[in-house]
Image (cartoon, rainbow, N blue to C red; front, side, top):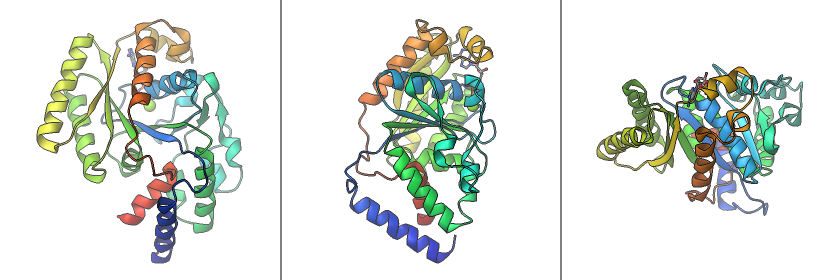
Length: 293
Ligand SMILES: Nc1ncnc2c1ncn2[C@@H]1O[C@H](COP(=O)(O)OP(=O)(O)O)[C@@H](O)[C@H]1O
Ligand SMILES: [Mg+2]
């Protein structure tokens, strides 16, 4: 990014921050679903949580930002026609990328390298940023499946979100990676709202104990607090739901995993958003961060 581009973005964001309610519209709550280690259940959590929010009457946009293993579309058995990359090169409109999902949710499918492509052309970038700002005002919640690990593109989503759902299983390797994620992210966002979801928990008690250990380490060594969002049991219905390309919350609505999902969605919505005044979209926040670094 050139110095001129950086200056113009900085000014743009300053104006946005000064007049958060200038358009008289609300902004979506931005929630990143992430993990230190892969394969711990992020995509299943993202999709089923999005549907749970939809059932609670929220307008939800689910963004598949896992650029290595974009698979929300596979979990839903839908065929993707256009991605953000097509919008950037001008062969599709924003609205062409959105897919209708269950319970009124909408899905923006994955496309690798799209955010990086925006660095190249400031006219296109401004157009996309403006479109995203408008788009997010139409939703109550924007939920992002970020993919696993500490790569820069994942960290940008994690540190730009209002809430982070950190998914882990109780295995020591997953917990160590979850801790590493919290450590790196908390350096860049000192007011991060981190909610831990323990997946594949053999027993609720064990899940809570796993969380307690992680919380103790985070308190002692990183000096901040994390929230316990809840746990999902090991449930053989979940791989079956994946095989059938049906979200488990629809396939087995009364299972303990589905009930837990709904409870966690409720719990998260009750927690306050720390930075309510900041209305910039996810993508705008990511660009603001790049400028400030
Ligand atoms: N609670 C669970 N019980 C049983 N299997 C699960 C559970 N959560 C996830 N899985 C299985 O684990 C696999 C990985 O889940 P996925 O959501 O794709 O993880 P990630 O997005 O983190 O890579 C899936 O095949 C899914 O069926
Ligand atoms: Mg995934």
